[in-house]
Image 1 (cartoon, helix red, strand yellow):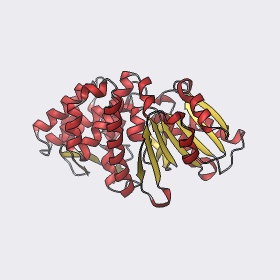
Image 2: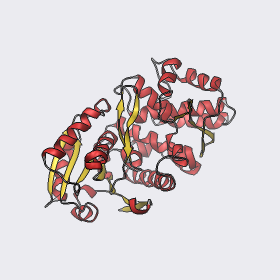
Image 3: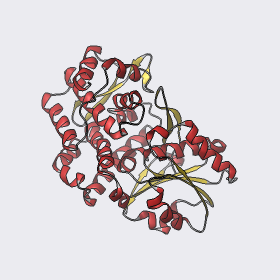
Length: 358
């Protein structure tokens, strides 16, 4: 088992990475020290892992609630269902909410914990690659709105992140690839050596090789933990983690939160950000080609059919990262050299969109 730490003073917490952690009662005795626990999962994950988690949490009082699966259910009304269960079972402020599932479950369970009795403890048990490398770490919680992705939410750090790598064996190939999009992001923002390692290990990652996946989970969590530890609430450096996300969130909201997995939209968004960087004279043509080639080799999208630049720009303008009426974007000066800016040529943005839409 690997253990990393997110250093946030009194809100610091461990990230545990390893096989079969779900079935290790000692892990939960050490890191989930609460008498009353609500497990939040969904109808896809629960049949696979709920009973093992309940067994590891004994003899505590454990209640489980199962949500419908999918990004389209990441809404305030679904979070209200979680609140109803907490209230019906008379959970007090010394309870904990445990999220068992992917990013959608984690975001909703964390938000429910953040607002129940003004905040109760929260533990992430991520079961997808995307959640293990990204969404389970950092304390961002929330839900979508028809107007935009994750517009309603709160920062609420977990007590622990317990990433059982065995759960990745039950992912579909599409879900695995979606998680790899976020892995590519870490190489692009600050680690060109890691990006080159990904280029050399595409086949192992797509085949679900446990050693290769463990390596990318650890490195991704190392990068995110370091950034979050310096900038918990995204006032500065943490915004680098949004590479591709302003484009990607616009794709998700414009298509109704159902057609595209989050990682797929982020992959297309990162290619758009790279194209815009090249159009702006910041990124060399060779680096753009490497980024597009790796994305395609991971069987991730580099084009978005059915959307126009006007529609995507409309959704980008209500993104959380808009400030003073300007869309803030993460661009690249090279692989491993990302930066945040609101100073760019609108023509470069439009040309980047035109190159990858329709």
